[in-house]
Image 1: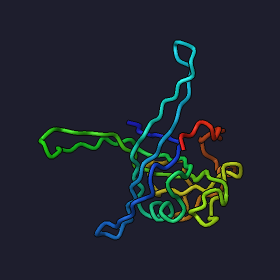
Image 2: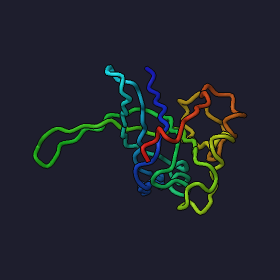
Image 3: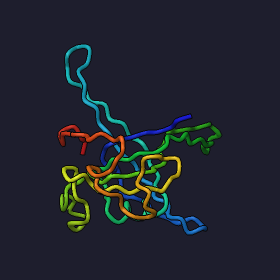
Image 4: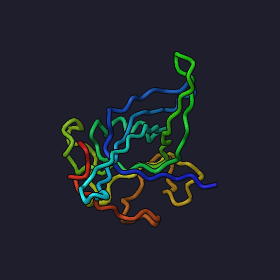
Length: 169
């Protein structure tokens, strides 16, 4: 089976970083992605998708260092169904994304909370980080290191042109 999700959007909150007993970094946050379309009545409508995302390993640490609420990011990963029982005994569930690859899309210095950080921007290809997942065949093979700019990678991710007016933040 094949389970691959690619979402471009803005983080809905700052990353919450913690460490598993094994020492693996785990980062949790959310992403919001907006779609504008013309409805049946001819009026422009907007649909916003909110999804929780989880980063692991070095990708979680890099995301925690450079990303903040509102940061624009492209994430690739696996869709996962989380299920639990609430306090009233009811069954609850939600979908989330386990991130395997991340590309920061903010232009350098555009996020004031990152201190003019490391992000290079979508025009220069952004910065990509991956979780070194063996199931991802076209990821950069370097372990725990930033991938080459997207323009230089031989992968199947198309360049995406997103208008800032389409983002809800």
